[in-house]
Length: 468
Ligand SMILES: Nc1ncnc2c1ncn2[C@@H]1O[C@H](COP(=O)(O)OP(=O)(O)OP(=O)(O)O)[C@@H](O)[C@H]1O
Image (tube, rainbow, N blue to C red; front, top):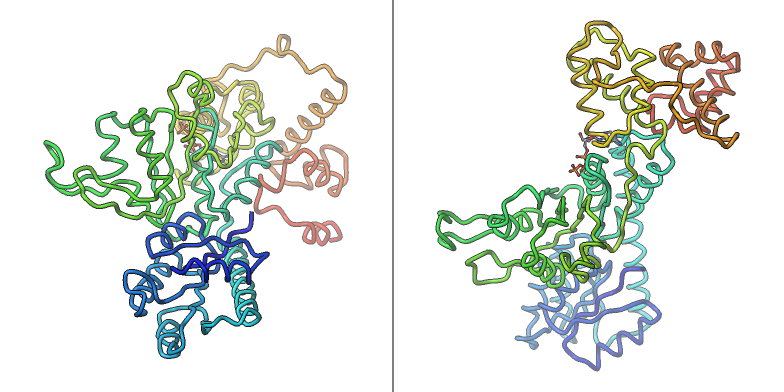
């Protein structure tokens, strides 16, 4: 849904008039600074109209100008339009000096206000688009996520689309499927990219310490609290808080986390004042939260707060082709890093990688490949180096539908040719007795390129190469 415009005005009549003037733009209202700040944190409005005369000193611009500064410190890209009274020119100039986008004199001329608001929304949208494009060019973040499986590519697309919307994302997937990697990618693609990414594994910290870890504590709050400690939520201010294994959060802390998500303030243990914090929470779990909710172990209201968008990450065994692809990528990384003489995998090792069920997913694969490279006595890593058994061809159950069998055979042939050709397209094409164009086309059909090899030529280069 489009983000709303925030009207900050203490006069209910004027609030109504502005809403009406600005309709059909979606608007929300705030009557004082506290309400306004909480609305800014919650809804991130692109445009705000701000009456400078606010309680407790409605006759002076003091509160309004100070609120302007606070809004811009939380959300610097917000376009704040200051609404000023008769003698307001001087204040308007001050407000512009403090970073306001524009001003509109009172009594408000509806046509003029609509023009200013319209322009503010358009400027904001253009700036956001500009930032998004710059971010995409600067950091091909998702390139670090190696996959050719359509289900995982769809996950990457969802992460990309969700990055800009400041919504809670829940990542569901088995251990080692890449939940943290995706959470980091989401953060780096989001407008919060330059602010902190703070991760906390709720399952790895003893229950007694978890509250302080999340919310922080003041000195002397409990025995052993020798100094003030800032919690992870506060540390992540402006950025993203990644709560891994959120299903392990004990009930009392679920209540506290929910309250934080509703009110966006934290209170350190032993502290006396609420501290406003602006973070995006990304949570992850490998447990079945629905079952936990049925058993009463996980709060439903917290679930819906965290899970505004749910992303299911497929396990590695559900991503055909990925184990071998990832194995090559990890092997290349480790051999480069260690200047190892290892050059690749034996055919039998590749078959074993393909046949293994990978209960520990990508983490298990990464560890096995790293260990194997260290252990390998030959230029080619064997199944034994990987600690894997080669699947018995006679007992391995082949898929039955003919189309699947054909596709699988084609994919196998492509992989083998690429392997034998050491990744060289011309050589692989020769082995398969097809043209380079046909090979590129088949690789694309089987998802063997794009995500797999960022150095592969793009369509234009391909044409140039093929024409050469
Ligand atoms: N698609 C991928 N491409 C490249 N590396 C990956 C991919 N998926 C996972 N990894 C790597 O595998 C390891 C495990 O990933 P990660 O820690 O993100 O998994 P996780 O799902 O958060 O695990 P856990 O639930 O146990 O915390 C990391 O080293 C990560 O970089």
